[in-house]
Length: 298
Ligand SMILES: [Zn+2]
Image 1 (cartoon, protein in one colour):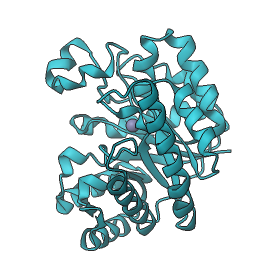
Image 2 (image 1 turned 60 degrees about the horizontal axis):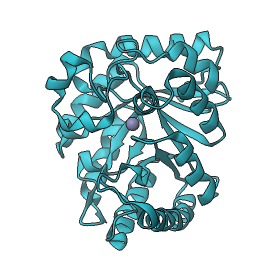
Image 3 (image 1 turned 120 degrees about the vertical axis):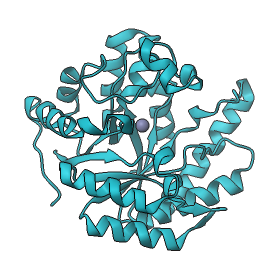
Image 4 (image 1 turned 180 degrees about the horizontal axis):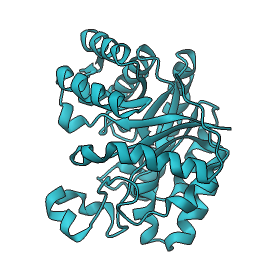
């Protein structure tokens, strides 16, 4: 069991299809000392109308090679297998798997259907959830052939729900992305730190990827609708701060994930770019203090 390197997200609203900007960011990430970068499919126009955008895939591959960075991939944020237009959702999902495979990324992050804002209730919710599970079984097979692990990320709902879904899909290559920031916000209104730490243990057998960032555990993710600068003064919502800047008890978290073997992936708002060097040091400190072996990929 070991951590395979530290990574940072390329931020989709910032890149917004500009591969030259991606190149500039990647050169900075490399200089700072990251091993991995999480590439958002939607941030680099990786898929257009359900189809892989081969030209951009080629350009992204070249940039990764140039800076000797390994990739994880984040599927488009709105991708949702609970929506009514399932055929199109599946097509985008398949192309996202191919995108990950082209980049030799083992990890493809997908927000489990709990991100659906239009709340489905009762029977409808069960049907949507069953449909998502069925689709994930099929997509899991394709991902397997391409050497990709589908990692369902928690949003504004319980880890228990996500783990139940992963258990029902029941495939080795469909597991959990535990996003500590999202879970900390959720559990701040649902049982507090004790429940938060328990949920980490619950996810552990299925844990394939982690997202590390910080916040103050204040208000639910619904406040995401307000702009960043109007939330920050009040410390509200999902702020994606560098670890240590908010209240998430990472010193207690890392000792719980000694069995995790994967990337320590930071997912930070790029306004904190100047602190990225400090983030690497801090991640290494958490890893060392928890006595987790560290294996650099290069
Ligand atoms: Zn995340």
